[in-house]
Image 1 (cartoon, rainbow, N blue to C red):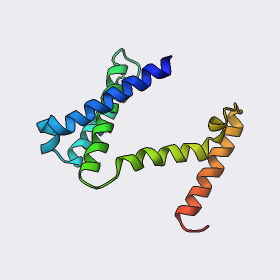
Image 2: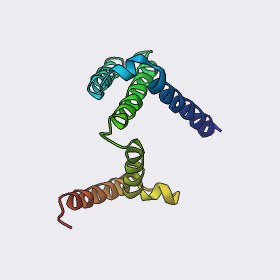
Image 3: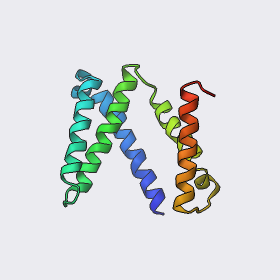
Length: 129
């Protein structure tokens, strides 16, 4: 039930991000560089408030700014926002296959798989394999 609530909330947030890109004058008059700087500032605020009562608010601000940055970069044709999501999904599937299989593994095994897959990715990225 908690996951369904979270999915519903994330969908609502994504709808608001879409509305923001259409209706907010600040979005249309700002660049991805502006939003990137905003994003970095929010990360700093999370760092500063890590053990304080407003951590949830600051994490929400980071999530908002991250989504807005992705949206703006897509708008400027610098990235494809669907590719951002697909890339991380595929990476996690490779690096944490036990999740997809619904299996628990030890911390050591999880680490070994992560390091092995990350190494393969690096070799592939450098055209070694």
